[in-house]
Length: 190
Image 1 (cartoon, rainbow, N blue to C red):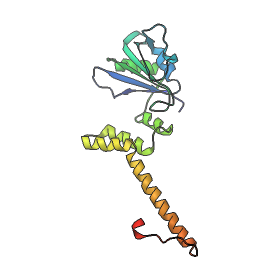
Image 2 (image 1 turned 180 degrees about the horizontal axis):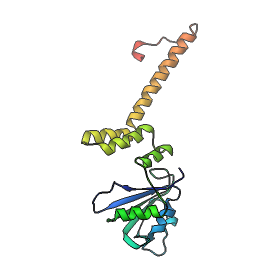
Image 3 (image 1 turned 90 degrees about the vertical axis):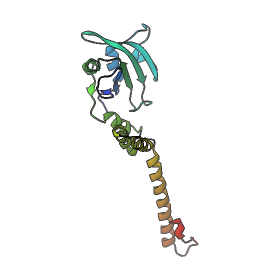
Image 4 (image 1 turned 60 degrees about the vertical axis):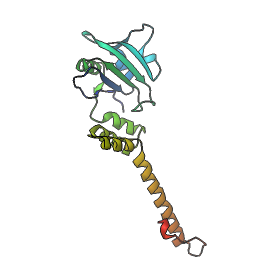
């Protein structure tokens, strides 16, 4: 993944608080072009991961909004890449436009989760469960999707696969070496 991407998270809607997420190798640089920390001795690119800074975001026309920038450094982020989340009161359209002007590309639908999958941050069932969780319309659907996202389905399938491989190996050994003292497979083992 070479390009740095940005998206409003959650999708744009009138709200008191919103987040623009930036991910990629240049995420800190892109966000640093529009974010100015209130503390003069701090720079976005030099702070450690899991750190927040208060400041302001700007575009070419000036100040957009107060902002808190959260930094997640690779590989310890959702996508496995450098990630900066800019949380603002409003003006998300302006903020997103500023991030794009600073060098990020608009993220495609599901691109953050795709990057998480490609970078080994989750398995395929977990990636699919993210979409199910987003689309959940009720408590049961949300809990089911969350269980899948946390790997419950994957662990169950791995258990079934391991059991089938064990049975297949036992059966193959019994058939291939009839003169050896290999115990017969019991029906309850199948």
